[in-house]
Image (cartoon, rainbow, N blue to C red; front, side, top):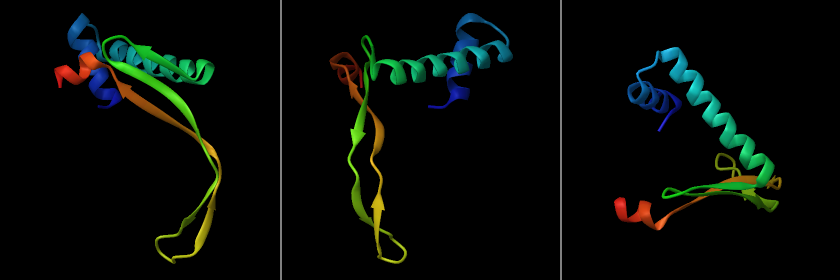
Length: 89
C-alpha cells in the first residue's frame, strides 16, 4: 500500500480532487507518525495495533566483507493484526 493508493481511495470515496486527496493522505500519515512518537503506539479498531519497540545494540556481519559491524540501538514499529482482520483475510 502506498500514499498514492490511499489518496486514490479517498478521492473515489468522497469525490474530491486529486490534490485534496493527496493532502488528506499526507495529513493522515503525519497524524499516525505523530501518535507513534507521542504515545508509542495506537490502535485502529477492527484493523490492528501499531507499537514502537526499542531494539538493542548488537553485532552483525557485513555481507560483502564478512567483517563484524556494530549496530546501534534504535526503534522499530511493530504491527499486530486484530482478530477481525485475521478472519477477513
